Length: 253
Image (tube, rainbow, N blue to C red; front, top):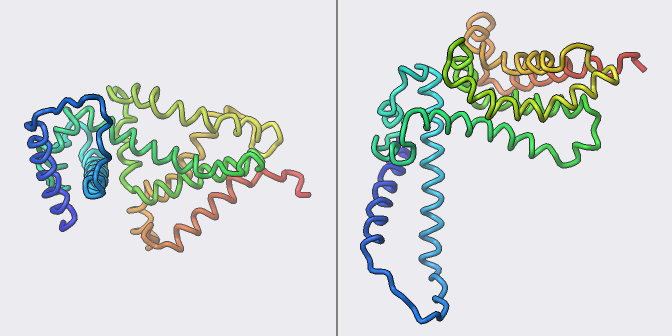
């Protein structure tokens, strides 16, 4: 809460400084290049940028939790403001409607997944298709563990008739699927994955990868295993990877 209060105070100060800057008269020069900004001004701008990033991320995390727990219709921007300790007006300044905020949360989550996939790109072309698949879906698995509200957020919009599902499919899900389907097909051609519709294999892997997160409460109650246990997470990643690679060497040689 101390961090949220710090963000709230600095954000309020930022808006005050912004309005003061707008009130200063513009100065026209004779064409001579303006002198470079002082180190102090550059430092202040950098701090301002860091605060803006921290504020946005705090809003994204709180909104993800709010939408996941309550669903879009019952979710409240005021509740999100309470979760962050920010003023309601600051959130509506950044995101003009609840729908735009929901879309920003969805885009932010999927951009983090893609960023993790891009981080794996170095040297990935030298790997076999099935090894590339295992790496990408294991990265997705770890993302679901680190963001336990993600699965519930997505599941709420997968219900029939959701007005946001078509946008999510076209904007986020199909582009992500397009990145992995070529390797799934290549792995099928070599026998490293079973034959069948590659889209169904994709969703099977997504389901396996997200099961530990989506069923975390049930798993904890039934077996005493929690996603907060780092060793349990590593065990699940190893088991998942073994399943994904099970067909890699079908002849056993």
